[in-house]
Image (cartoon, rainbow, N blue to C red):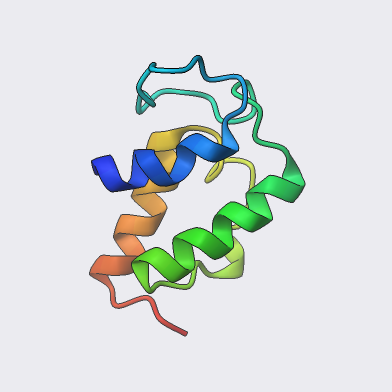
Length: 83
């Protein structure tokens, strides 16, 4: 997981203590990501990484942890995932 990605996530994780890094196994919902914020985060990710996550990726499993979300983004980048 890139540092830039962790930095992008941080504002959406209101329960992540100040100064604590975003761990790959961090459960995003436990750290405060709700469904409305997930949509905003998705827009930020798509703009920052120039990818579009396909509908089949927009599920609880993808947004479960920082790492699962990063893997989805990285796989789309590798495949040229721009719709």
